[in-house]
Image 1 (cartoon, rainbow, N blue to C red):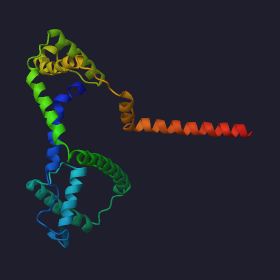
Image 2 (cartoon, rainbow, N blue to C red):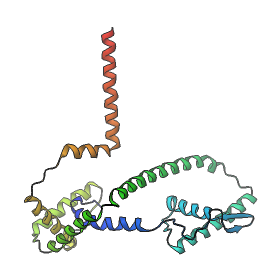
Image 3 (cartoon, helix red, strand yellow):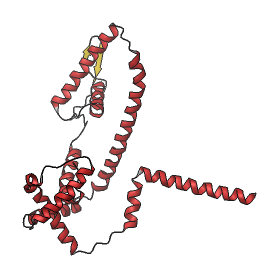
Image 4 (tube, one colour):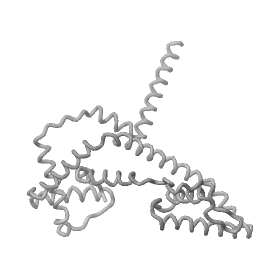
Length: 255
């Protein structure tokens, strides 16, 4: 569904709560004090260590399915899957299994995995930067966020919206959905459901109309541009082009 960025204010606090909750868990704390080399299972002649078990959990979390490392049933299921995997590998070894197509595609799959891990690493580093920025001084701004949201929620129900307000919002949203190759149910079927959103937007719009806001657009644009890979590439090309022109000019002067 097409996102309505105008409503982000009403969801920000909830998002922060979920974000903080995710970091509150002590992931891989290993409070049991188990050594990596401790054997947790033996399959035939093969020993599975605690380190193998934890690595398998990591692999599944990254490449297969969401695993909660604090959920006993899910973590146990990982060990079970690792045992089953070893049983299958032993059978493949006994059968002297060979597959040329697999050999050819393995390199490609590993390259794809490297890219995925790099993307995850970049995201985690950004998340850690966020945590470091807020962990020691988040309470005051967070309280302001909660207070603002609480007040807004207490006022939204009293905002009067007309039939025209609803239809205008629906037309705008329908256009966005259509541009994204999506469609919306008929207006009459969603009229009641969209009313709170229209009220929320009108509430903010009314407040904004009575408040002077001075956006330092040059600073804003500079930061946003730093997040754009394409703009970085274009800037880089421009710099190279500029240097090339200087070089050409210098060569021409030399001649």
